[in-house]
Image (cartoon, rainbow, N blue to C red; front, top):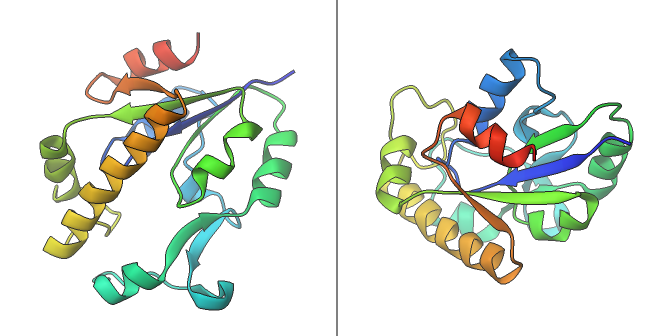
Length: 169
């Protein structure tokens, strides 16, 4: 039976980068953001909307990035091999029962800020000063929740090889 492992963390923790590196090496390590139909930004009345690159306080206070539980459950059931899913959503803690193991990529707020502002970053989250502060605050909040749930912390400053070694045990 295939093992289902979820790797979460705040924006800038390296989920996309590590996932891409592992996929290039042949590991079934999808980036949740690249799985069509899994996620989206939702506003009032559960209406899906497009994320604006310069999202402001009003947008972020009134919208949430969510995963579709039914879609994720079906996706995992269809996996023939072990899957190491990298991603984060506003309702991720409602999904952890779908996984055999969950890990949290942890790094300092200073490194997160540096990564969020790096010119090579394609994800627009964190580009404006407001988005950066909002993302760092959310990162702290989800880390606290992960600790309450006894989710194992992984040092996000390690190499993808070191992280894979830790999550594949």
